[in-house]
Length: 273
Ligand code: DGL
Image (cartoon, rainbow, N blue to C red; front, top):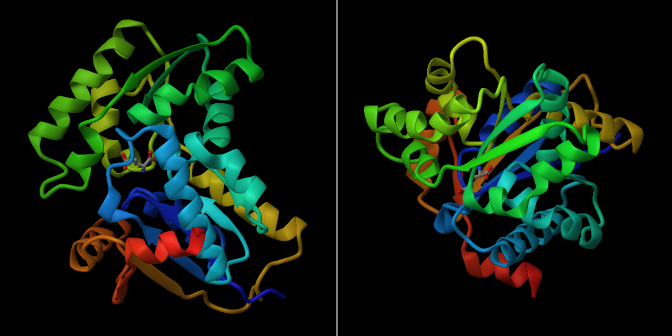
């Protein structure tokens, strides 16, 4: 029996899509979720800077006593997964490999679209992983810089978001992809908009459920699970605005988030010093 919590992080509320699936799969585990709201969005930042942020947060969570870290952010996974796995003592699970796998399995015409942040697209990680699984599959990538700020904004379901989705989807529809990877953990929060734009014949792939399964398998293999009879507890931390996080978290996760703790960037930096 291992009573330590699981650490989960993202730039903002997108990682809550992954946390949700973890809560469904592992209701008996405790979780600490950190949203790096003060430095959101991650997408336009250089990969080197994201590696630094991910390292700070990974080491901070490790210092909080977590037994596993979930990088619930595609941009941070694309930039920093190998480095985190090398540096942290606890297991680290990312969100890109499960999606690449699911997309290769889902596509029938071997034309796969990717919607993601600029950082994730420029890392080339999805192409690499898809090609390793099926050298004959094509990946067409579109960076969507407006989506995360819109989703984290005042009115995520407004016409402006739908218009941005239509614009980003156009080249993928034109190319006849039959599968689209939602390569950013924020995007499943506007899944109905995306599904309406692409239609029923296009399969939307996202990794939250697969990631939760990988977390469960890792805990089981390493024999670091908590008591299955107990009920888990959650802690929410943000470097950004506490009230804004609580409101958005409640809306998207439909979970009564009571207490959100503020963490200073300097505290994260100190954890990595
Ligand atoms: N949820 C993050 C991701 O998966 C969003 C990145 C951002 O803040 O731009 O990439």
